[in-house]
Image: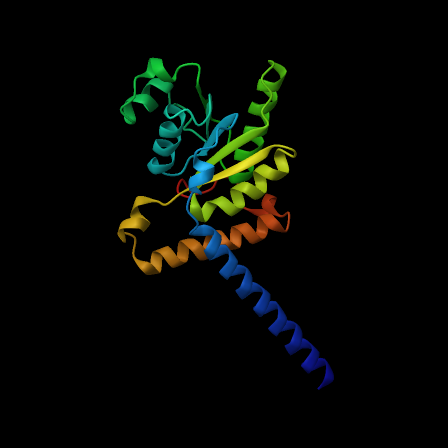
Length: 207
C-alpha cells in the first residue's frame, strides 16, 4: 500500500504540473504583440513561415521601419523574391537587398539554426545582430523563442505573435483548434526537454 500511495502521489503531482504547464502555454499562445514593444526598432526581423498572415505582418513591419532587414525562414525551395512580393502586393525592387529567403529550414529547430547562420553571416560582413523581432503564430511563439534562444545566445528576441485569421474569425472549429494547441504543447514540451531531434524531420506547413 505504501508504494501504491507513493505512485499515486507522483502521478498526481505529474498531472498537476502538466495541467499548470498547459495553462501557462495557453496564456502565452493567446498573448498579443505588446504595443510598446511594437514601436521598438530591432536589428532584424525573422518570420517563421507557416501562414500568410505571418509573412504579411513581417513585410508590414519592415515597411514601417521596425528593422532594416527581414529573414523569411523556411521558405519554399523554389520561391523567388519576385514571387513573394507579387503574392503580397509589393514591388520586388523595394524588397531587394532587404529581404532574404531562407530555404534550408523544415522544422522550428531548423528555423533557429537557419537564423543563427544568417545572423553570423551578417556579423562577418560587419553588421552584427543584437536584437531580432520574431514573427510567428501566437501558439508557436513559445517553442520558437525556446529554439531561437538556444541558437542565438546573447541576442535579444522580441516576440511579435500573430493570431491566424482562421482562429480569429472562428472559421477553425473549436475541436480542431483544441487539437492544434494540444499538439503544439506536446511539441513545446519535447523541445523543452531537449528532445527536438525525436520530432519529424519536416513539420506541418501550418505549425
